[in-house]
Structures are given as structure tokens and as C-alpha cells.
Length: 486
View (spheres, rainbow, N blue to C red):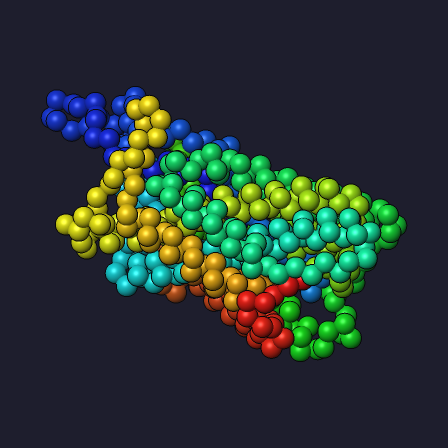
């Protein structure tokens, strides 16, 4: 679930319109859109960039491991399957950005707005729960991933300096705490539209480390002069029959996680200018970005597997271990950490905003919750300090950090997140909303096909979740809390 949404153009409501004789806003205003917000300026290319940034995240690093569990035939086939499902359901979801007419209908600014407009009631609660639990999980996954990369830098330098004589055992906790402190500082950025610069930095970083991982995989294969791996994946013997089944299921979850960006699709679509209709532009952007991502994933997963075979690591960059050029790996690992610092914020901001809005509505007269204290920064600029925001966001970061220190298994956590978020957010809600929106009659061929797709994906999700839970259970057996070291 990749990582980065770009600036979510959630501009304040400016109610300044070109007003016609009857006192209503005119549609043809130069500065404002039909909903009274400043004109959106997004294009196919900006939307594609946002999606690619959101999708190519730390999930790409577990793809060599996932390919190794499934083998040369099933690995790429499953990636194609997920890319097709993601593309298809994204086009269904993009049709739900406007309710009613696709060109002039009422806009839905967020995923939950779209669910509220199309399905209403109880479904909105379920969607919000799944979405926010997923974002909370992503925060934990990113904390673990960043500590793994920081330790990889420390270990590779330690190995290099000792000429490989020192085993360099390191505890991950200080690194998780350091990441947590950075997030406490960044989480005081009040809201999304002030995050755009962090988003751009994170995007550049994700391409940096993915490309280094890919390049090292190619170099590793060229050096060995042969491709490792087999048609059916990891061989029985390296793992038991049961382990192979569970790990294959978990690989499905990892691949699903690497593709998931439905959580933020509507928010990205809300940055696009019209005409042509936002749905048309979004379909094009989805096609471009899913194609680019799939190509990239195929290369990273395949080259990683070709380089390491059955021994493909859970995180591609830690697998090259301590080979030279060790400084190149350090650059890649530092890029991951910087990317994850930004990505954590991008994914947590919708959750922060939701909690703060809900609490402020419930206690409108509470000074602690609603009052902003102005702190002058430089010249005429000031920072609005809100005590509730300060306390709640700090507690949130501390909670995710402590949970990460308790459960430092990157792969299993990634697989579980992918499994839990994939079916409801990527398949079920888009399909159900599309059926309502297009008034597709029950039991018609089209309705049946959509339901079959949804049920098939539900089974994949359940299998992937089971595989990841089995992985966590086997990790817990050999593990002491707060003392993980590599």
C-alpha cells in the first residue's frame, strides 16, 4: 500500500463566485470550479505521478521474496492478475467520484464520501473502520521497515570496517525510537496541503531505491552468469510442504499490498481539472500508472529472484547484504528511510484529520480541543499550535512505535495489511458502488460477473490473511519482545 498521495488539493472552501442575475454561481467561472473551490489544475500526468508514487512504495522490496514462493510461472502471473484487477476496479471507483451525472453530478471528496453517497448508512461505518485500521497498520509497517533499513546501513559499515570479522549484532529498538521522534515532529504539520514538498521528496526517493535494487539484481545475475530459481518456486526441503502452502498464501498478500492505492484514489481524482470529465482523465492515468508499475514490479521481483533463487530475502536491499559497492546500498537504504518518513505522514494525515474533526464536533466549546495558540516563527508568519493536536498525534506515534517494537516482522505485517485492505477497499466497495451508480439489474450477466470477481478476490484475501497470520505465529515462537536484533 504503497506510499504517497501527493498534495491532496483539499483547499479551503472559498465561496467567491461569478454570480449570475438570479444570484447563483455560474459554471463558467475562470477561478472557481462548480463546487466553489479554487479551480483544480491536475492533469493525466500529475494524477499518474501521484498514483505511481502511492503504489511504488516499500511493498516493492518484498516482491522478490513473493516471486520466490510462487516460482517463475505463478509469480509473474499473479502480478499480472493483481494489476488487471486493480486497474479494472479503479476504473469502477473513478466513476463514483461524482454522484448522478458523470460531468455535472455532486463531487465526493473522499472514499468515505463516495460510499456515503452510493451505499449509505452502515456501509460508511464499515468502510471508515477498514480504511483507518489499514492506515494505522501502514504506520506500524513503515516504522518496522525504516528500522530494518537503518540497521542495514549500520551493519554494512560495521562489516566493512571490521573486514567481515565482526558479526555486528544490532538491536532494532533505538532505530524505531529515532524514527518515532522524527514522526512526532513531522506530525505537527497541521494538514495535507502543507505536505506537498514531503510528498515530492518521498517520490524521488522511492524511485531511487527501487532502481538501485533492480540494478544490483541485474549485476548479481550477470556476475553469476545464470538465472536462479525454478518454475514452481521454493523447493520442498528448503521448507516443509505446509510451510510452502502458507508462504505462497502470504506472497499473495505481499503482492496485493504492493498494488493497493484505492484508499486514496478519490482524493487524487479530486485534484483533476475538467473538461474532459474527471473519470475519463482518471481512467487514462490509471492505465498509464498501472502499466508502469507492473513493468517495474516484474523487473524487481524477477531480477531479485533470478539473483537469489530460494534464498530471496524478505526485503530485497538487505539481501545484497554486505557486498560491494556497499556505499550504493547505504544510499538506497537511506532513501528508503527518507521515503518512509514522508509516506508515514501522507498515510496518517487522513486519520489525524478524521479524529480531530470528530472530536471538535463533539466538544465544540472545549478550549483544549478547539483553541489555536499563535506562535510567531519569523517576521509576520506564525504557527498555530493546537494542544489537542499536539497531545493526540504524539500519543498516536508513540503507540505505533511501541507496537512496532513488539512485532518487528516486516514481511508478515505487510502481507497481513495487503490481505485485510485488498478485498474491501480495492474490490468490494468499488463493485457495489458501481452497481448502484449504473443501476445494474440483479442477476443480469454483468451483475453476476462483477459478483464472481468480488467473491474470487475475497477468497484470495482470506488465503493471504491466513498465510500471514501463520507467518506471525511461527515468528512469535522464536521471538522475545523488545529484544530483536540482527
